[in-house]
Length: 633
Image 1 (cartoon, rainbow, N blue to C red):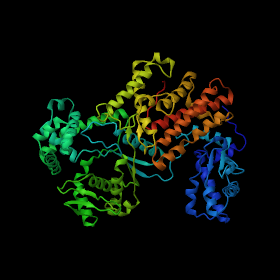
Image 2: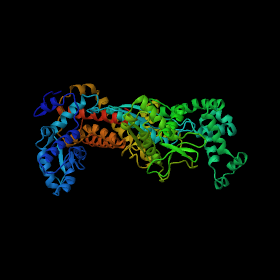
Image 3: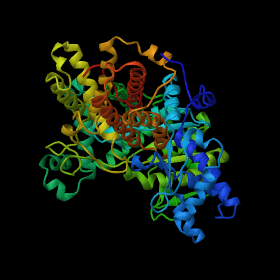
Image 4: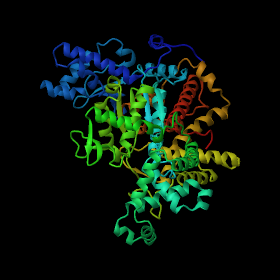
């Protein structure tokens, strides 16, 4: 393979040797320098603190025919200066073209576009060299963050005595994806599954076990029976007369046990006070509950660094309340203890009148413990949007309290990563025909079964008839579960997620199957020709982007790092799925139109390099989303 490079290539390659090239970051640096000059020349007054926000407006162009990146800050600056946006844009361009190094990476802009857009196009030589650099880089051209942080991510957090249901899928897969993406970005990530393994729910289960348990069912399926007891006792404890009239079984039980709510609270208090019988039962329930949950996590490919449930923090709760009371932040109200915060009608309850602690108490103790033991810079809570007010009050209280370390608490970034509800195709919360919440395991089973039908039909690969049964099962599991996870992650997390097996398993459109199929196509190129991909990476020292489809694909490849930056900026994995979809689309256009193995000379070298990079980035992107890939499909 050729090692000759012409033009300005040697200077660009030498300057970035051993480094990645992030064109958007470079463009923003050039714009920042131009804005500093614009302000210094008195054209528009721009404070130094404003420039980072202005250059954040440098984004990918909406239409590639106008360039690759576009700056839109001229419109806002023109309004401030009382000038025409195009005139301000022209002034920015004149300074931009004088910034050292711009012409090595970008073609010099000549005039504004439209009302004042300033567009930049990456030089083909620079883009080609960026591909060469990324090809030889184990990180595929993605530089780690300059200032890594310690970030705790709190997600999934099911109640252990109930089977996991469809509502747990969003917190679990969003949290897992963010953990993987932020770790790849270079941060130190600590994942913690804050299990619901204490509190009133166990009071319900303890009372139900003692009075209503089907011992035979418990022996066969303990978690299912405990879940049944929880739902039944909760119905009895919260029952309203009109509801009992529609449920004869519940009405009969209420006649036998008329004071269920009080009895449940008594069992809860006994557990919290260390009653030997209740603690013994709790310890009996926990292994089966944990085993059931871990089995589901294993199928999802999800693991945690720590699983510190509510019970872990129980010894610390009284001290939290005493501290808040002692500081004057909490006070008694109708026998209960609460923190009253400005701007909220309801206080944050931290202890009930009967002495029982609440979620808020545990959450405050958890923040304090994490600060003391992990010294995080950020704590992210991946919890549905219905808990928004709880987290607002929790974070405000933690800041006022100081959590035993006021200075570190003040610096700590606490973030509620909210998400919407999982809906069925009818636009209602996704439930079974009987009206029950869909169990997560049954959801996974159906996804795998449907994927197996696609595999059995050989859809996507005419050689499917030659697959072994083991191959089929492995591919079906990977495709089926990947489809469920990707369908959720590709949604903007703040919106409700519509669940549709038919859509998520399609081999076209923005689905995991489409991405997995693209990876399999890349694998097929190299396996059919017997080409060693390591040799391609090692020996390719130059690529020539001649065809527009080669250039378009190369640009999508070098934007991988930009997508990861965007995910971190707003904690939205769907920005990565969108980038993967764009990349797969560009590759499909490239693959369908241009020969690879039948090409010759430098053209063949270039196209093999682009294929290898596409496969690696799609595979890595899916891996960061927690989704597996297959070599044939």
